[in-house]
Image 1 (cartoon, rainbow, N blue to C red):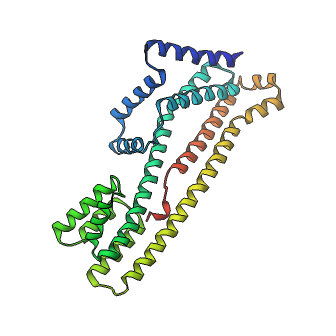
Image 2: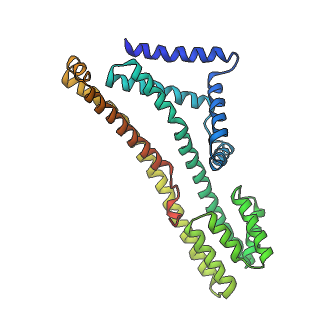
Length: 303
């Protein structure tokens, strides 16, 4: 009975908001409100990441965000009701769960952006090596890759800046330092160091050295994509296990009996323990989400 009351409560909120925005879909209204908050308070770096995610066509639609709000809100309400049998507590937990959606969107956008940067670094590295084998000039190789159309911003604009720095200083050191400071990937630093040695000291075996570097890049790329597949498999199992932990309370109630459980949760310290269990399990899930969405392409990083 109480579960039905909770669902009806959320339906009432849906209807009220919809009526207040006549002629406009509720999910669009929610999305626009959230976007305004993002634009006002989000740091510039995240705004840039989110714009790139939209440009890549991987940003959630307003409808997808609305579905996510509904799933989080109703799911949290049902789970918390199983723990406390309190509508008020269920409503509070529903809003707390919904409040985490922007943070999850932030993690997801960072993941999409880091995957994009990783792929662009891969393209930059392999193409510069191939161009250098033809031109035997690092700057000419950069110009060839820039003009080939395989790079996108922000990598493309940074390559343009490298070319400008190299021409202004008549040396490639500053240009390489500029790029290395922006992209902390050790394969980039190793490749640039090799180009410095070839340019300044000369090397009769530069072709062989660059071929070895290309093989290293291929091996690292293979490792990163294998890690991505492993993460996806782990993520599905992790989320399933984390959600299952919430419902262990149903097993406890089955063992104790509903009447004994209700008498137990009337004690304040038992309720405190239950809140702690929910908080710890939620922290466990959020930490797992953070791990899944960060350090994509970590094998390349010098961190």
